[in-house]
Length: 195
Image (cartoon, rainbow, N blue to C red):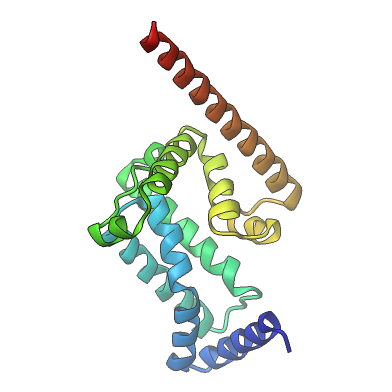
């Protein structure tokens, strides 16, 4: 039995046990997904404490949903959808929808482990993503940072697969244009500094 089938079976068994009130089974679900959900939320809010709070809300809501015997067909997109809506709620409450992506804040331990070139590239890429419209930011993060499939993204954002594919394609074209514009600007500035 390959690993993904085995993991899928474990997840389905855990879901059944959670519906019966088994907190240890929910612990398995939590341990399986908490790092991925935290990474997604932290990338979106750029504040460790706020991300921790949102992640706790995500898992609390998920527990309540499953324990009340409401259906969950595929747990991963369900968790990302809950996280997505919690993030939207957070920014609505703060009236900062246009600032969904702010600068990445690294604590000293993470910064010490990170190669400075990679850190610069991530910062540069993050700044470019921030310049995209919200809809494009969402699909790029879900697809290329979180690794969700098109089907899973449709469940998160509530749009059909064709719409998600088109949005993702347009988002990547916009990101490429921004990158090219920045490179051309850097070359022009370097040329002006030489003369």
